[in-house]
Image 1: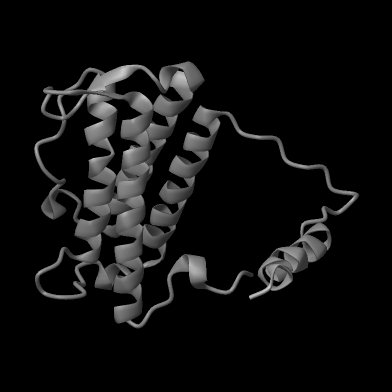
Image 2: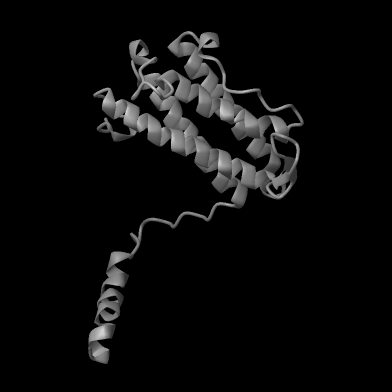
Length: 186
């Protein structure tokens, strides 16, 4: 292969790049978010997605399971929202919960929706209150054996929620429904 042939893909990319990435002259570029604002945006985004699912999924299907061995739809939501307290409680000096919230304690769709909203709201308030400097503060893990940075635990919690969001998308599809994020925009 000649030197020109090996450089051809890069030359084509360089030719296309200015037009492909040109910004609209009338649109101002967005500002770069600070570390805690970026975390808060991700936290709120996954909270919004899980809340939308909790509100959208039919109540009569809340105990639906994609397979018999899995949690029900409601139990998935309760687990994801309850896991927020494995971050929130140690970060605020409280004891971590002892297991998942029980479905029997959240009998209705409204109960589950309220719990999801509450946990993400409390987490958002905590992240806002800490700000950029607070991300590097240390906090104990749920067993109190190790210290981690507040930011690392918060990002890990966002990731955990995202994993359950993905599982709930499968629940939607197996139940013959379309998740809110995939529904046509009105």
